[in-house]
Amino acid sequence: MLSSFFGGQEERRRDPEDGQWRTYKELQQVCKGKYPEQEIQQYWETSMFKEGMAPGDLPERQMVNVVSDPFMTAGAARREQRAQAQSPSDTSPSPFVTAPGQSSGLPDRYPPPQQSEDFLASQREQMYEEMVKARRHWTEVAARMMGPGDPERKNTVRNILVVAPWLLFMWVLLLWVLLRHYSADCCVVLTALLAIASAAMILLWLMGKRFGQVSLLALGSLCLLAVVAATVVGSLGWHTYWRQYWWLQTGYRSEGNSALTAALGLSDSSIIGFWNDTTKRTINNTYVDSYMSAGYKDKHYYCVAPILSPRAIEGTITRVNFWAVGLDCCQRSGSFFCDDSRRSDAGYGVVMLDDGFPCPDCHEQKFRAAVEKAEAIHNLVSAPGAIMVRWVRNPMATELGMLWKAVLFIVLSGILSFSVLGVLGVLLWYYGIGKRSLFESVDDGSRQKLLA
Image 1 (cartoon, rainbow, N blue to C red):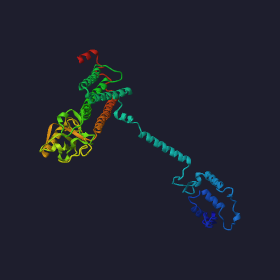
Image 2 (image 1 turned 45 degrees about the vertical axis):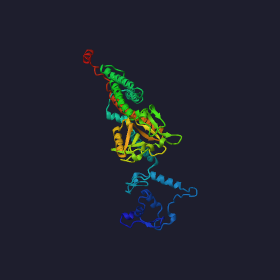
Image 3 (image 1 turned 180 degrees about the horizontal axis):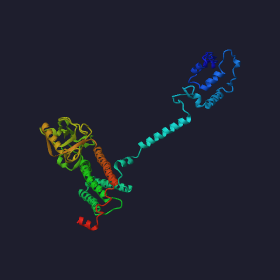
Image 4 (image 1 turned 135 degrees about the vertical axis):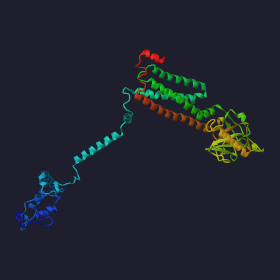
């Protein structure tokens, strides 16, 4: 190496691994990035042959007994000791080597186990924090949007403001769809009493009265709203669903009729039977004549067809005592397929109140127009008191269908009312509306003058 310093030829040594002659710089170039500088220098001094040197002249190297140590763990331990003993200053001759088995500028491809566990633990903690933020309770988010609200609010007050008006709504609703069948006057009286009681709570609040933590203004307003809303919704449910259903329970169920039976004699009937259980046919071969039907179109088709028998059409003009009706189940003329009108085993008529369908007096004028149209086209004449019916095979199934729709109306009304009244109750409770009386800060004399 001194000869290279003074400009002489560099020393070359023979590498026992491949038998090549190399200088020290060439050895560094070959081992660059694979071994630290200390091991390269040690390999140059102890393992490579100088010119004229015999193999026995090399320093004795530690040999590994592969029989007793097939995995060469001793050699690996020695290499690990050498790597640990190396200091950062040992890597200065090679700018590409910064640590044993680690090149400069590149991350460690296989980090230590403890470092990997710490990294995974931090990742799990970060993911958990993000999940907690995402699952933050909706009440906290709503509270931030709504502001601080009343600092003295109690959960029991909230429950009262939500549940009490809703129960009152359901009570009044049931009055108007169930009790009204037996006594409409009783419904009016009870509803009026509940409305007066609700208004009295508002009046007591105006007079400065308190009822614990519950605001009489909020409770009275919600109850009054519930009574009024239940009256309107109950009346709607009565006319749309429950009146027709109760009529089926009240009206007379007539059997043994035919198309020739006078309609005026069955004016109090809810179900008219044309079926003969003995012959398994309709009496006098009564049927729905779909060819003499007519449809009155006004956004929908309002369909009517005469219920006739062969004896009823013997003359020039046919008298019709019963009309089968339906909605959107026909064409302008001569095609009627409403309910079970095309079935040969159908023979019952469910009477529609006030000549309306699907509810009493619904679209009455339009069905009347359809009847007049059928009379003009097919030379038909309606008998006095002609009855409009739904032609069905099983009247009990039709009755259950009406009951199902009526009950569903109550359930949906209850769900919707709970949502609306619940939101209003929570808002009044949250902001403490009405907890402080209007005249609470006014003296008794001034209060009496204001109320006088």
